Length: 171
Image (cartoon, rainbow, N blue to C red):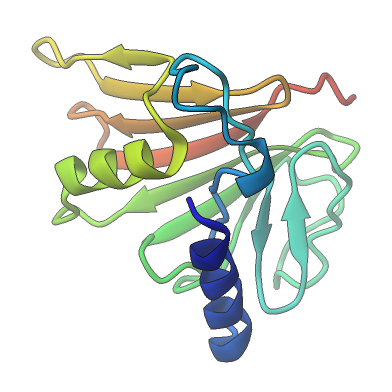
């Protein structure tokens, strides 16, 4: 991703106050074209109107109505992320964010999402093709973060979801 494009995305986010997940390659850390297998860093946060939720960091969830300090799964209000129908934050009992999941509506174009994330993050480290009722999964990861794009026909809820997971080992 070019620095200009990254700058534009940041300006748009700030201008409209939209909430979205930031999954982008750090422009200064892009590998050279002659290093196709180099890993790309993945951003580890999700911005809401009231806070930034960061993997491996304490998040109190105090802005979420009904959330209790000891809750290990906190559902964010509907429409938190314009493309997802539901967003859930998974925390340790101490309140440290371990993963963030985004469920997408049934009509979501999985192929378009694959293309978008390939352009943003490069080729996935793992790509599991669907076999019968088995999920189709694409995985990108760096030393701290794992990002998964999944289409799972056996889920009763949304069949397409993404998940950001902390790999830092933060307790």
